[in-house]
Amino acid sequence: MKKLTSRLSVLQELFAFLGKRRLWWLMPLIAVLIIFGLLLILASISPALTPFVYTLF
Image 1 (spheres, rainbow, N blue to C red):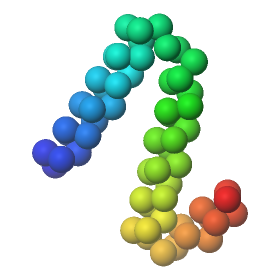
Image 2 (cartoon, one colour):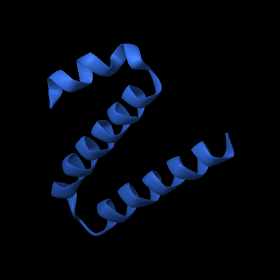
Image 3 (tube, one colour):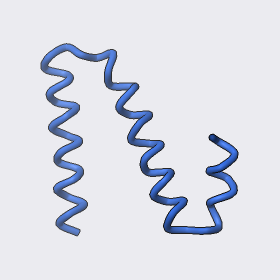
């Protein structure tokens, strides 16, 4: 649980940095990369989701 909390704090710091530096245009790009990363992690954990992930790519 501690690893998850530290990873979330890294994401919070990243978005805070982007907001402070007025790099708003990077936020959607990073959000999409995070979503795809989570999707790939879920696909590797659960074989039942694998066919749905392959249709996206």
